[in-house]
Length: 93
Image (cartoon, rainbow, N blue to C red; front, top):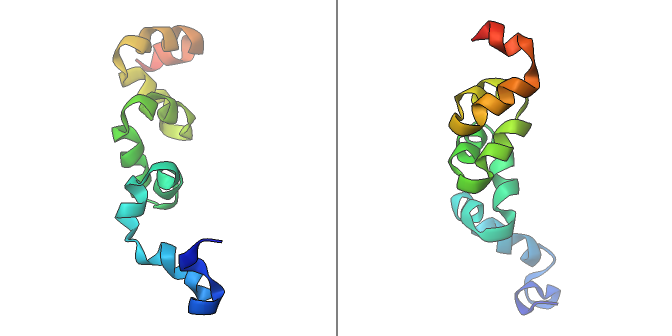
């Protein structure tokens, strides 16, 4: 058990306050939890995902309704994506 979470010193809530004391933005940046925090953070989430570099394209593909449009915009991959998705997209373009 980590020393800052010892129940003798802080009561049970000592465990909770450790994470609460860190501001939310900081948590978002910090490593492993970052992606989850972004997903939770509501309106920001989509923007954050778009910015996030390497993972961005994958995230866009997952993101439901907007996915097709995003793919069409996405430069090099766009033509391939169109081929996969058949006649419907050609009509739309």
